[in-house]
Length: 514
Image (tube, rainbow, N blue to C red):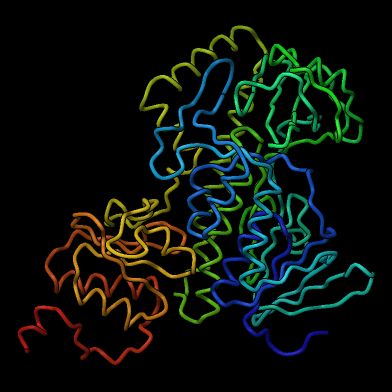
C-alpha cells in the first residue's frame, strides 16, 4: 500500500490521443506524470479517427508538432457532405484552412514522442482495476503485465480510457445516452480505382459508405447497411461490403484484399460531470458521439488542452480556487454541442423516405452555398468557433479563440509562446508597466509580448489559446490597474507581492513622483 501524500504527480489512464497530449503538457510544465495503458505497446490500426480539424491543428502547432503531423497525411480544403455537396474549408482563418486526413496512429505517434521527450512515463500492460480518493490524493490499483498487482498514489487522476472507462465506472458515474448507429462495418482494403476526393462519403437512406486513405496504398472503408443489422461479433462479408459501397457511392472502386475487418456500434453518451474530487474524465471516457463530422478525437484532444494547464497551475501552487472546476464548466457544453450536432448530422444523412431525401438535398445545397451559413458550418466543424463563457460586462473578445497574432520580435507569432503552460500578455504598446507586471510580479506564469501590428487592445491569452481577458484602455494608469486585476484573477497572487504600497514603474503616478 502507498504511504504518505503524493509528491505532486498525476496518473493518466489511457494512452490514446487525449492521454498522450495531456501527458506531454504536464511533463513540459515540470509535473511528474505516468500514463497507465492496459494494452501492450504496439501500433494499432483499429481506429475510426482520420480527421484532424483546424482548431486541433492550432493546438498541436502550439506544441510544435503540427507540421510533422501534417506531413503524414493529405490536406482537404473541402469536406464532402452528401452527394456532390462540399463544405469549403479554404476560407477558414489561420494557418490550417483544411482538414488533415491521417490515421489516428500517426497522431498518437507524434504525441507519444513529444510526451516521452518531455519526461512523461508510459507504462504499457498496466490495467487499472480500481481507485479510491481522499482529501490529499488518489490511490490507484494497477494489475501489471506479469499478473502482479500494485497500488500507486497520485495527487490527481485523469481517466482518458475510452468509452468503457474503468475510471468512470470506479467513480460510479452514469453514462446516459443511446445507440446512434449499430452494425457498422470496418475494413482496410486495396482499391483498384482511387477516389478523386481525399475523403469520400455518401448515403442513400439504406446505405452509407466512407473511404479514407492511410497514405500507403491502403484505405479504410466504413459502411452501414440498413437491410442487414447484426451483432458486432458477426464477421464482415466482403461481398456485402462491396455491394453497400456501390449502393452509396455508385462504385466500389475495385475493393479487394482486406487485411482487417470488424464491426462496431456508435453511441451518443455523456457523463454528467467531468470532475469528481481529484479525478477527471476526458475524451471518450467523458463523451462519445456519432462519427459524423469526424469530431470525436478532436474534442478529446481539446479536453486535454483545456485541463492540462489547469492541473499544472494547481500543482505549482498558484491556481485560483475555482480553476479546476472550470474544466467541467467549459468542456461539458462543448461535448454536449458536438454530441447533438454530430447526431443530427448522422440522422440527417440516413433519412430513408424519398421526399425527406429530396428536402435533405435542398438543405445541404443551401448550407454549402449561402456564404454566412457555410461559414458557420465550417466554423462549427473545424472547432474554430468554440468559445467559453465570459462575464456579461467583459470585452467582446473574452472567451474566444485567440488568432495566431504576429508579434514584434522573436518568436514572431503567438502560437510559438503557447504550449508551456504559461499565459501570454499581448500588449498594444511597449509599456514598461506591462512588462513589469508580467515578468516580475507574475514571473514564471506569464509571457509578455508586443503585438506586431497596430492595435489598441491588450489581451491576456490562456495557455490553451483562448482569450482570458482584454481591454481597449489607453490611459496608462487605468490599463496597468486593469492588467493587474486580470492577472490576479487568472494567475493567483503575485509571486513576490510586497504590499499595496508598491508602485508599478511607467505609470503616471510614478513618473510624477520622479
